[in-house]
Image (spheres, rainbow, N blue to C red):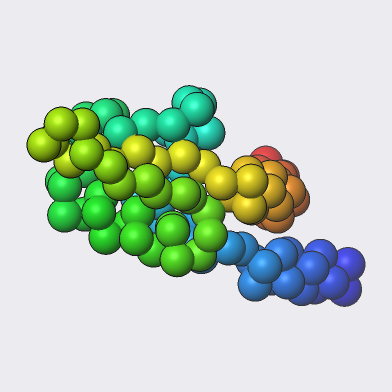
Length: 112
């Protein structure tokens, strides 16, 4: 019975996972942004290996969820998009880690 309660607790943790962050593509973007003050669109395209369209769509979702801030300006006549992790995004990443850690720990224990 102890295993059943433990599994139920883990299943509850899984239900708490932030799907916006858990997406591999969005997690990759957030990992890059967590390491810098801000990043322009070209830098994000290069470092993540995403296409411009894929990056744009995922940034839009992250912005809608309040996880990133996007500032679009012009430098001369050239458009420039700067992206930064919002304070809500930093908090959400910490919560994601706190949610995932017990799940991963239990999975690793069960592998032994």
